[in-house]
Image (cartoon, rainbow, N blue to C red; front, side, top):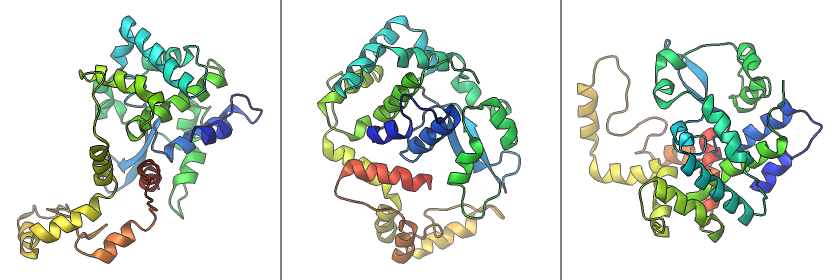
Length: 290
């Protein structure tokens, strides 16, 4: 995965910042990794019958919250962890990633602001958004990910640092899905941040069960629903729901209908699973994006 990222966003290139960085962001989005910007599609806050593309700062740049970057001792420890983990993977990192993250944190709104609709709701056209961040082609990202039929300049950080930062985001994103001694420093550091024993680990089968539940939830739900909810309970729920409000009560009967095996199969038709847990996690991330 990191080799593919290096090919998409090499440490040096004459292709141009916009093309390379856009390709890299798209590459990471398809692996479920949030890096420099978090793209999502939700109902428009002022027009719930329409959808809008939201571009937000990542909720976590690297440490759990921007305030953590004000803790000198913690940042120093974090810098050591980043260096050790990447060194284990053959990447020599002099500390520029954490310095880069610190700069990003300094210009990122706090969690309260990010959750305040009066602050984050600032509708702009694609061109207007593009002018705010010319290094990334928003139109290219939208065109790449939009469904069929959709219509719709100064260098302050080296390419090497940006590439290493993107690789670090992939590593952080998949750290819980990989059992490799190279990642032990990061496991221990995450445990410390969570107030756990640094050596605490979760047995592998629990990790795999959680992954299965998150990945194929409707398939698992189907058997539970068939066993626990007779059709009459769904009909009763439909009768007492608030008039004219469309919502899923108890369990969905559309997209997919969990009582219909064929419909559930159709829902997951684009997802190819294997016997490898990590490969399945990556496949699910791509499936959910598409």
